[in-house]
Image 1 (cartoon, rainbow, N blue to C red):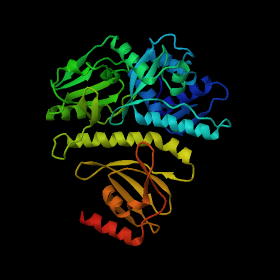
Image 2: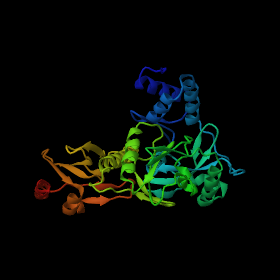
Image 3: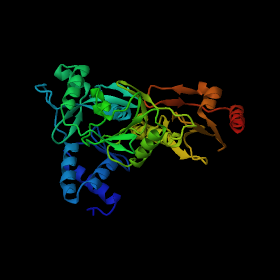
Length: 394
């Protein structure tokens, strides 16, 4: 049994402990009902809640107290790099780094100093995942930023290589098989994904050729062969079962081998296409949702950051959609379809490619990640009618 009756009471206790433990002057903001920002640290309450539920009852209170203390007062990294032993590699969604960048930009705008905040260096890994450098202290794990590297007079590439070797020296519990076709990792130490950087970790599975990998959370890798239809179906099903697990990373299946990874694309005829499509849509929604609030705070009232929505169609497929509304300058996420709402509340739904072909000059690409398009005006009545006709004939 738990010590809190429901989600609301748990979240209230976490907020209370954060407020009590934070130093005077620490800025604490409610980003949404499930996210709190402490200074530049973004805290997902759902992650804490999921971890709490997995612990034994007697471990919960001490763990929560220690975790909150580490969040509000993370130990400072050393000013001089006297040892590289705590360095570890990490695999993270790029949206996490973008969220931190947006928070820093907002603080910079409001800061009287007006100086640039340090960015987090990374290497692309595959799909929406990147490799970062971590400092693994006894009570917390910190992402190393560029300012820290400059202070150490060190380069990201050199230290990442050391970090990968440090992790390779750690004990490795290997893999367990699911249905003899799919392998799942067993380490549960927050570094299962990062072990892919070591070169021979995936070789332990004995699978030949290109592999399909899903990294739903920091403590789980799911691996199968790309030519194993049943294996991909099982792997996607396992990932869908893990949607609520703490410390999510990515639900986008990747395909590749060694250091070459790219998003898996399945044709509609593939037996695992429905599960793959749902995972991909959920992953995009997760990435966009994590950035919407900090980006909205940054652009203020100048633009509306439009939500990325995922829905199930009548045929069981999962499609994404966003809304482009007349008279509302907006940032649109790239979705399968767009709902255009005129000043008279007429609604026209069209697929993204059709909209871009007909009125693409109104859609300005930006340098945001994930992909966002700026729209300042709205299609004319004639253009809206053509979009309606094309959509009805599709």
